[in-house]
Image (tube, rainbow, N blue to C red):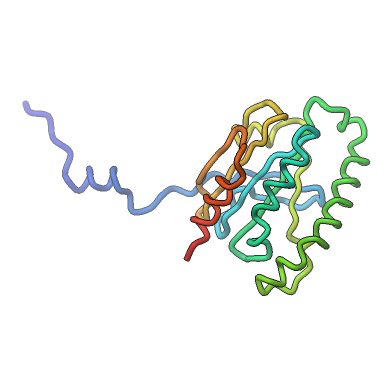
Length: 183
């Protein structure tokens, strides 16, 4: 008996599905105790790691995307990798410092918000996640080395667009975000 061949329609569907399954939500809690879905659909989301070793690189990479800040279709989330640090011992202090840094960052971002027609206070949109136990780093499948600048970009549909285990050229990040935000 001959084996049944799959129909052409089935082959086309498998090769070019009409829809993609929704990405499983990657959830966390930010420093303001708000729930955050890192790969929430509806906006392009850049998730950048920070650690004591990469603080300046994180700021520089994030600044590369400042011109998009305040847009409804763009988010920037910082995951602060605090595994294997003394931060867990002084967690309250670390959280307070993170909040102070976000308050200052909100003032810096106001001109970008206004340039994008957004009159709101940027502070409400700033998302920084303290990762004391490494669960968020693990969920993003990031390299374990906190000295590396790890970045993940999710598209408007919540699916992974690009991933770097150690971003060196911030223009690469900018190019991925710019392409996805293009009309």
